[in-house]
Length: 366
Image (cartoon, rainbow, N blue to C red; front, side, top):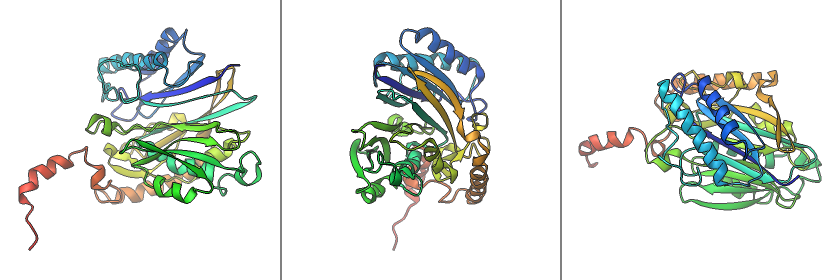
């Protein structure tokens, strides 16, 4: 078949209750809107949520950054916002930073991850969706999947993977990007992606398969776009698997040991990223801990066959137990770092107001 585009576009347009989940009426409205307005645009779609974020998973043949697809997503979120306001849900429309659509949802609030490719004889994809964290949360697992042979055996024993992968890294402050060729530039890569608040892995490409795209993530920062704190970014990640790319099990393996991410309570605390089944993806304790859901699909002529709810597997029980232990420790630190984010990450909360109020009380040191 012709090349297929997989688009995942998400937004928080109202939480039920608080920041914990999405009301079923919003999900129904999203499905109805995509079915009606997308019938001439989409091959297939799947609507779900993680925490208080609505996730639109769509396939089509219009390529990335298509105005029609992005308008469809925008209109869907606007329709859902209307329902959220009727139900008086918390933060109704908070991720919609503009009043009208301007051709592309990038920079307007919703998160976008898209990739276009020729469907292989078997095309397994894993879609990761997170809540209460930011785009840099994918840096660690993407490194493990595509550059760490202790995680991904295929880097050693699969001839189609042995040459390694290219990592496209975005600087979210300077709005620049750089490509790292791995494995030879792994150390250079780690210098940057070890600072996930600023540098994020946007995409990964196969060096053996002629630059074929393997993974793509959302990299928008809501606070940088809005100039104020409007909620965390709650990113998504698409990963293709098998046949010269990491096996499904290698794609999931990094989440067996939860790593610390920014974005817990009020977007201002570090916490463990807990792998969760779809039914367990509503964060409650201190509005957390941060959650990640992994849904697997087989693409067949652009149709989404699935999903497989990967983190429902009991094999991730120990990861959840460890995440809860880490959560206990981090919570014991209360308002102190390293549970609370450093001050430069709090510039969009109350910190500037407090500094302004106290500016005349700071005296020079003798």
